[in-house]
Length: 450
Image (cartoon, rainbow, N blue to C red; front, side, top):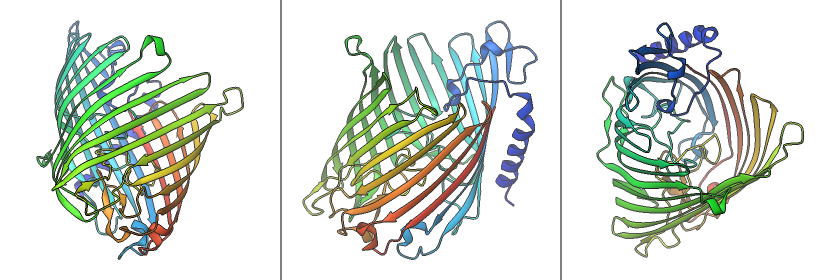
């Protein structure tokens, strides 16, 4: 048993023992540095300590056990003809120092382990104790600045997410400034993603990649309840691969998102156009994605009927000096399903979804996702981020397949959440012509936060 494994087990055990002590807490956020517990501070609180009259120190922790399996792995293409099931362990602890009303020092450490994966752990599976986040921030009423290692998510996480599914969440080194006033907010940032290594305190910024941009959100008074996001992202990496070409990539993404809800309806429509250069090719790529639904709030369990549709462009001609394959940068890998089998590049999908809430803490979602290549001449792409081509699928049929997914989450308390997922993927001609097979996926996880 590795040191990381031992620490992970100890972390989860301590979380279980701590459950009765903090069952009434609330106010948790996915990005833990956004929490503010100062109203609950006292000199004897185990979570938030007052320092003088105007400062405070808050402690927190996260632990997760997630077990999952694929049968077969990688659609059974190539040498992957059998299944692979494994278990992931995650433990994180943080301290949040607030000095007066504006200065914040946030430090978060993490330890991660994996057991059972065929071929051993990958880079986002295992690490001895390391710095997950560590930054200094100034938070004013309208303007804020954050310098150091930090997590970030934007919009629906289609292009930039914290990568919650894998074991090690995605973080960046860099700077971020934000301006906000009433219903307007503008963020500007310059980042390099963290390169995860398995040793202790050896993670560094990945100097071969960079991300910068501006992201604005606002709600025009005359168009309420419509909300609008506008953004520009500059992405660069020294080495990328699309279908048959490798090389340096510089890509600009110009996007807009329209979203909101009223009278039971909710909607989210996002479009992105990408330009730039990849190796000796010009980039001209795009995506259109929508998620629209209606919630029957007067019916038992408040069912929501939704429809997701996506097109992420592909490359029609691999030899014309123009790259048409969309790059989703640092996306949520579970956007299409918890199995994370496919990446949003050269992809079209139609995804009806039914969501029910049998209880205030229980949520169940059933969906059926139909998927095609945008252009059959291009490949099928899979995670990890940004995307990886399956070379055997270049020029195969257009229909990738369909997947039926059942997902559920149950929150026992503000601290505890259990999740389960089952996916059956039925391979289409784009995969079967390359030797691909049907895939079954199962996942169960238990997470604790304090």
